[in-house]
Image (cartoon, rainbow, N blue to C red; front, side, top):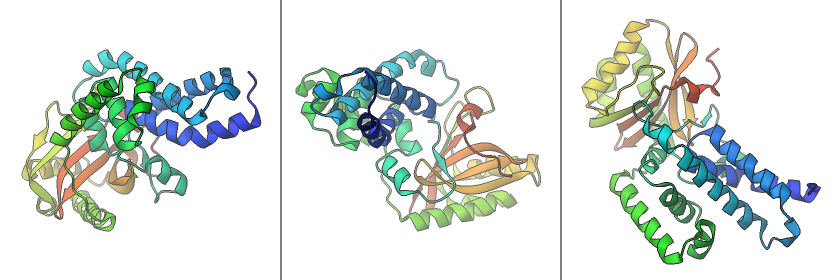
Length: 293
């Protein structure tokens, strides 16, 4: 069919929601954009006048496409070198109303990292229920399963995620201030100051994708992690810079070496100290981030 102005307006209005579903399912902007584009092509070929709900139809198609793509990525993810973290969604300024709506629910790096433990259908059912608040009847229709089966998928996924997901709610201003202080300490190579801001059992997960140096295991300990930041500044004196940014909707840091982005960093903070650090170094996942100057 030929898309009408009404069809275009309907899809444009729903696109942020469709992207949110696809990105949470797949963890990369390119895959999410491809899924949304495929959904548009199918919408373009459908008889919109015969659909009871354009939103329900598009959410269903997007979810099924994302499941198929995630399944096709399974071997690639299993062969991935080291830990796999999502491609960061980075904003250098506070969120606009449009992007705030797009990142309204859980989309943090830590949360998406936990979702990697779920099967594609568990991930879809969990996100549709817990993040997008879909009824079980709707989820069952989207996944072509019974409501009972979908409830079991959500229950199993919720158990896995809640078992490992830390829940620390701190004011954004406090999070922002602590990262600002940590950034200054890291930039100056003040190991003692960094160590004081890190929890004793702090952990660090890094993703280099086999293209740049990263760690194949989770690193732990305030002294060790403070030493990593110090060693980079020591290796490139005067060339390491930091910039605060929103990383997947939360306060984070961008690190630059000689003006080029070296990593996007996300943090979990509890009781005034950093308890987890996620560092995305794979250059393919940083391509959309602008250089420092």
